Length: 182
Image (tube, rainbow, N blue to C red; front, top):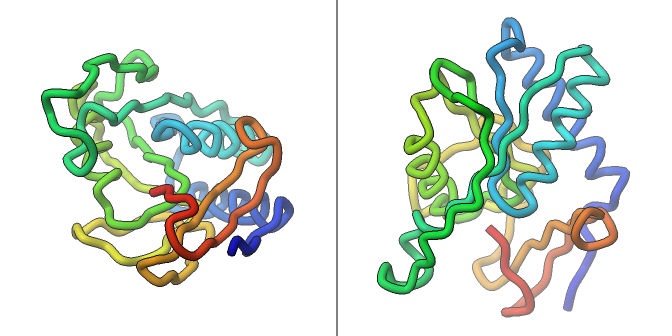
């Protein structure tokens, strides 16, 4: 059974709130870079950058990070494709990189993202922005910016839908093995 827990308007408000928190915590936005974790994190990062430009008149570069070759909890190492579809700004050295993802669950996606990011440079600082924190961490990873905390049971799944891919914006929760996103 699938139930909508966040509609499009509430999702937009959560992203706006994250944007305001980023502005408040950063003195100066010049060295800021958003890096979205493929796939939905990229669209959320683009939306944060658009909102930042609307609010502050500052253009924040947005990159896309492919972590598939850095996962430790998916396919065996021998079956990895080694095709990296990341698209990042020219340099990340001495930048404040804000990693953006849709759902934070075990923390393994973020661990993989940190490993992947370090192959592209040495940021001055890395922060984490997630639309949904659902709990159940397996690694000591904590987000800096959270749109919604949605506590879940282990057998429940959270799905973030974005209009760019799914034709609508919302967040649903389902029981069983219907859909899983981290």
